[in-house]
Image (cartoon, rainbow, N blue to C red; front, side, top):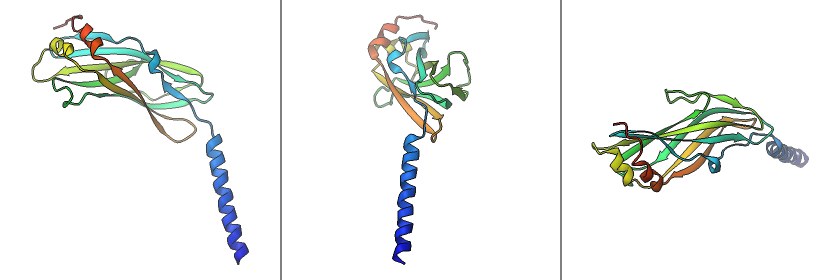
Length: 179
């Protein structure tokens, strides 16, 4: 009886070791948004109640495995407690597949390749304030680009942070005014 229990216990330990080795050796993609290579922030448009800013950044897969990118979006962090004069929303698009419906089309990123992503941030004025004045008093704003994907391992969500600095926005306050 004790031998049967030891045999079952041994098989359980062996099964656990096999699962650990399999999980460690199973290949997956190494998809990253390379924030260190983002282009300078560009003012797309500016009017009384809205400013549209954008930059390009590479999404790079540095592995021998393809990645199915199921979603990609940007999340600006500008709470009203920090800055009550404006709110921000954003979109992420593939540079060769521009869309106007805020939808990121799921695609396969091949091994050892990259895409150019366009990150667009739209600042909206609150309470009838003028966007040019808001940009002059803007604070640093953090944001994150989220990449959702599937490699050979389970579904993943990766987050890549960047900061829009107030000094950049203050320089843009004198930019192309469309309003």
